[in-house]
Image: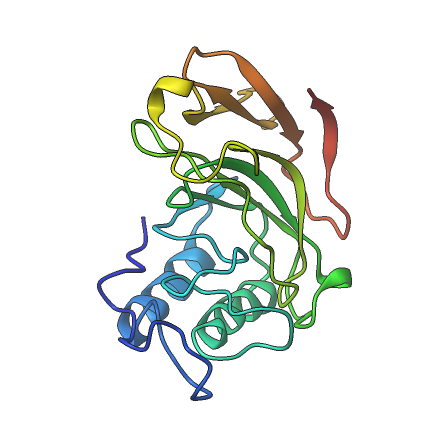
Length: 209
């Protein structure tokens, strides 16, 4: 688990300066060190905030090369690549809908990283929003997203059923990770199987709707 709220700067991520922080120097150094040292098949980063969804209180500012808080994320992703760390998966919430993002350096403004997945899911009992806008700095592609529609409007009450959570399973024999996005009634909405091996393209066994 990383803390992206306690250490962030107080600028609301406004683009009036070329540096910002959201992890803090001490936590960033710790995360780099522990990821490089880990011998686990999967390195799962549970984060407060998503990386590529534009939000003044998160990381992404909008299309373009890294700026403000994005510099720390670029530094982290590049260090992961240099250390040869594989099988990184990010799990987060905060945005009040559910989505699966595949980060592709071939589609990114900043390209010094290995591809990875980020899964966003929530809320469990709060207003639901519509899917947010993605920033191309790190090349996220929305493979799936589900939230309230434009006609329904943002902050839709929980009684409408658009409440979400995710489930992660790892097969003991193959090591394949299955991530399933679900609704409040435990119905499977979408899932993906990810193979634990180095890759330059997403190692997807299957996607299910």
